[in-house]
Image 1 (tube, helix red, strand yellow):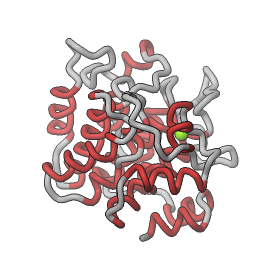
Image 2 (cartoon, protein in one colour):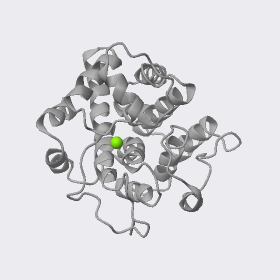
Image 3 (spheres, helix red, strand yellow):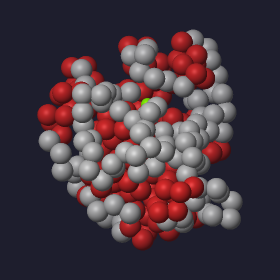
Image 4 (cartoon, helix red, strand yellow):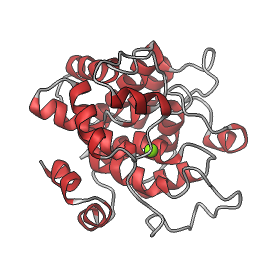
Amino acid sequence: MAIVGAILGDIAGSQYEFQRPKNLNWKKCELFTDNCYFTDDTVMTLAAKLAVKNNIPFADSYRKLGRQYPNAGYGGMFDSWLRWDDEKPYNSFGNGSAMRCSYIGEYFNTEKEVIEWATKSADCTHNHHEGIKGAVVTSMCIYMARTGASKAEIFNYTKIQYPMDFYKYSVEYELDEYRDTYRWDVTCQGSVPVAIRCFLDSEDYESFLRNVYSLPCDMDTLCAIGGGIAEEFYHGTGFDEEWLLKNYLDGDLYRIVRL
Ligand SMILES: [Mg+2]
């Protein structure tokens, strides 16, 4: 289940979202600690799932669940959009559209549907073309991983979406280069290709998380974006998912995961 990969990624990344020690021993450090918690990435991932399952507009579902968890760590623009029923999409290309769409790649069975629904999931807030692209590419990579695509195929797809001639952070750069050059970035185009590169250079779900840990980044969100892809590709996270979900989520959120 991609959403489990995204949610555990959010939780693992949360402890270093704002303060990543410069000398972090990312190969060996603990991934799930007492400093971890679920953030907006988890709440919105589950809100997107409810929108699809209950066939209600994404905007309504984001607002309903978001208001139940008003302090989950939303960005400023999204926070005010959440508060008022009549707020319009605000042309965002923040990585929020990419971190919440994992259920779409997990649920739909054709590329056409994945693209359509990912677009819808982004549109009510992140209607900038890069905001929509972030959701579409993340959902498509999850769908590809789930349906047996190889890493080379996922790489080629992402390369076409984020070619190095036009994007500062293309999937084409090696992770080693990113360790020197990458700077904290909360845009879709500064997050999605990098999260996918962390997945491509991993051997399992855990090493994917550690690759993200190796970068100074919006860590919960990069772990959530690539976490859905890694979970589908490796057929699970290798962690005691049931225990982690029950330990870090409350009863309401846990029930939505298991719906
Ligand atoms: Mg977050």
